[in-house]
Image 1 (tube, rainbow, N blue to C red):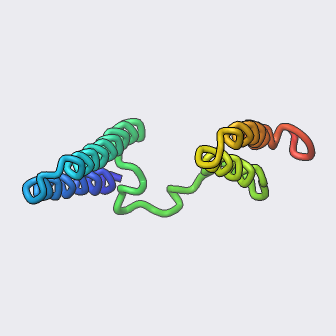
Image 2: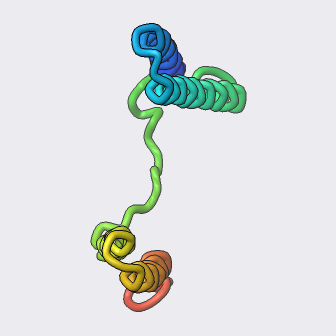
Image 3: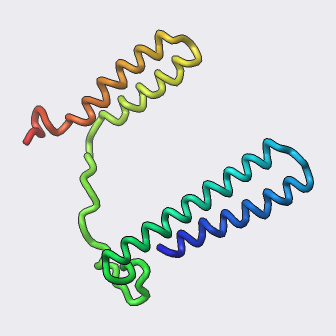
Length: 136
């Protein structure tokens, strides 16, 4: 995973070089500021990945399985989490978010209706496996 950190560091250096060239040619404050923010964002993500990998390697006692050139695919096996195979609630959450977004354009009454629908659909998504046939 160190490769990913250095990829983001490389992106930050590329954005920095293009930012300097952009400023020298255009003298435009808005584009230069946007590119500077891109430099900061890429550097921040690279630093976070680098820092996290150092902590994980220290806890693991060595390189992670994806950094080991002699590593085997089976080392990455394990449970990744539970994902509901047939849930309709994400659709309702998305439709509620769309209603809220359209409400900003067309009228605040739609924002309120979308927020109420969002609240109900998020509650349904969270408590899907706590009631009915799937309760445990």
